[in-house]
Each structure stands twice: as structure tokens, then as C-alpha cells.
Length: 553
Image (tube, rainbow, N blue to C red; front, side, top):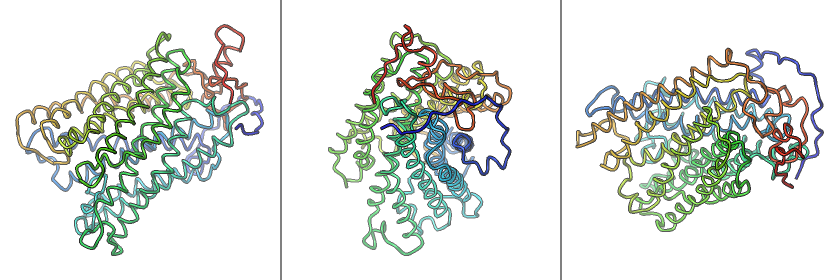
């Protein structure tokens, strides 16, 4: 359906008033809230990265004592929690906050005040989780999955776990409200001519992500409530000695946890699609296939949670193995379409495109190893080893993180009106890409050699010290690459070269307005005749270069 809304009236282009501190604190403008989301998640990203460097230093050689056992447990709990709940998915939601109304020709999201609340809940949740570090008993130290009985009151009596639970509940509420807001906005506030089949692929992926959030996050909230009741109110949901079941916690948690993987990856599939199409100078190849593949991933993601539980003996391994194999098919379709988009395109390789290609290469390795651990015999061999840690990181760090960086380089000019330094950007890409693979490929090998995960030190068995030292050296290179991008962001925000309204020759609607956009996003909306209205505006229909594929809604 197409919402009946009037086109934005033309208005004179006035310089935007510089927002003060109070403006940022009380804003309901989706663009400001999107920037707050992204800036906050990048802050948590730097904290989580610093924690990872400390852990890597501790594991560089056997027998080191840079941090003690309990402190190490807190560090890997906070690192995993930050990256899963406070960085990868929230950055994507912040990016969608900024872009989704621009992509569909709307003035704002459907519920601006609720949108502001979602940001403050995210920030409060993150600070609550990390506030455990201020306690004498320390922060949560039972792992980011918070498995029972490790997280029950007898094993972790301090309030760190309770703060973790409260923080995750706030983040869950934020995500659920954001999903409702996104879906309502897309269904009801599209501009005239913006039919569903003209939506950018990024928007389709946000739709699918929002649907997954609505299915997966309520079970997480239930698991957190039950865990808190067990800890503080005398419940026995997960206490086997009183008729409960620790396996029940795993079922409820992973019913959220595996779909959450796709909450963290599907928006970045959309990012890569937009970047690849723009810098291939071609429309998206197989648009409908891209959309249907996203829905297939969402559907299948709800049926694979127990492949995390093969070794429990409590699940039907063949069924969940088959479902896990099947989910690789729609992901393969996306790779086929990305390659098809680039095929015979007029390819250019700015930094955003390099990070998008880095995403494809790294995520491919994460996907292939995911198919490996979807086989129960192989999973039995590598369960609780560094092989699983590395597979997970290639999916979400080698994958999502690289697409996150691609998004920064691609949309920074639209958000700020300034370009990031391409020279610094390309140096950052190569340091990040090389450093990342030097960090994690040795961990695949040490995992196959049997090194367990979640250990503060290890025995000097053959190959283990050398591989871990190589990994730690790679982490230093990776950190330097990330630091260059952060420096690039800070410097270019105020001193970057002027970008103009459309520095990349983009096709989607955000490139048809000024950079940064005005208060209500558009001075005037162009006619929307296809899924590439900005391209159509530059190349009116009827010219040889402007024969865009108009799609009926």
C-alpha cells in the first residue's frame, strides 16, 4: 500500500541551526536520535575493544598474570555483552533510525517520543550492566549467555548479575519498541510512489529484522525475568534440585540467541547491498530474490536455536542440523546477487566498497564454518573450543563489524556534509582486514588442537603458545586500524572536505536531499518511479542512462 501523504513542499535552503546540548538531550528528531545511537554504540565498541586487547594480552603466552581469574571472567562477560547487546545490533538500529525515513520519503518516524525513549533505555541499560564494575563484588562474571546454574545466587551472589539482568531487560524493551516504530513507519508513512517493491533493500532488511525482534526478544525478557525470580524471589525455574531445569534456560535463551544473530547481520546485508550497487554503478541484481531471501532467513532462524545444544543430549540433533544447513541457502542467494550486481559493472573502490568486500570475504568464512558446526559429529569435536569462538567472530566481527565500517564511510557525508579522508580510510581498511585475519585464523587452528574457550590461561601444549602469540600480535594491528577510523571520524566531523549532496552518485532517496538533510528531511521530494529515485532525478526517464526499472507496487 501507499500512504496518502502530501509531498514535501519546496522550501528555501537555510543553514541548519547548530544544536546545543539541551537540544540533543530532548530531541525527538530521528536524525539526532540516530546519531546518538551510533555515537553511543561506537563508545561501547571502543570499551569492548579495549577489554578484548586485555584478554588477548593475558592469553599471549601460558601462565601470565596480567589479570586474575575473577577479573578475566568479568572481562569476557562484559566484552561479549557489549558487542552483542550494545554495539552490533544497536548501531544497525541507529543507522536505520537515521536512514529509514529518508529512504521512504517520510518526515520522521511514526512515534518520535517513543523513539527518543528507546535511545535512553539503551544507554541506561548499557550503563547499568557496566555499573557492576563499581561494586566491591565486581560486575557479572558468568559469561554473556548467563547460563544457569552459573548465574544462580549460590554461584554468583553479588549484585553484578542482577544489574546485568536489569540492563538486558531495558535493552530488550528498547529494541521491541524500535521494531514497532520501524514497521509502523514503513507501512503508513511512505511517500507517494514509494510502493513496497520500490523500497531499498536496506529498508526491506530492517522490516525483516524488526519482525525477528518481535518474535525473539520477548522470550529473552521471559528468560531474564525467570532468572531474576530464581535469584532473588525463591523461584526454581532452572534449579534441578527443586524440579526445575537448567536445560530450560538454554532453550529459552537460544530461542532468542540464534535469531539475534540475524538481527545483528540482516541490516548489514542491506548496507552491503546498497554500497555494492552504488559503487558498481548498477541496480541491485535479483532485487526480488534479495527480499525473499531475507524473509527465508527470518523464518528459518526461528527453527535452528537448538544447534547450540547438540551436546546436551536433550534435543533432536538431526532435525536441527538439517534446519541449520538450510539457512545457508538464502544467504548463498545474497552472495550470488552481490556478485551479479558487480558483474560487468563500472566498479570503483573507495573505502566503503573495500569494507563491503572485506565483509563478504570474512562472512563467507564464518558461514562455511557455520555449516561445519551444524553437523553434530563436527560440533562434538569443536564444542567449547576456540574454533567456535572464531566462527562466531568471523560471522559478527569479520562480518557485521566490517559492514558497520562500510556504513560509516558511505553515509558519513550524508550525516555531516563532509567527507572522511579516503587516504586514512584505505590505510585503516588494510590494517583492519590484515589484522583481523592474523588475529583469528590462528584461533581456528588452536581450537582444532583442542584449546578450550573461556580460560584465563592454558598449558604450553604443542602449537598453543605460538598460535596465541600470533593472534595477540594481530589484535594490535587490528586495534591500530580501528583507531585510524575513529581518528578519521573525529577530525573529519569538523574539518573534512565538503561532500555535496550526493558525493557517490547514489540511487536511493536520501541522496536526493541536502547533506545534512533539513529538519523534515526534504526541501522537495522528486517523483518516485522506481527503486532508484535519486538516479532517476539525475537521469530523467526517457534518456538512455535513465531507463531505470520501474516497479509496480
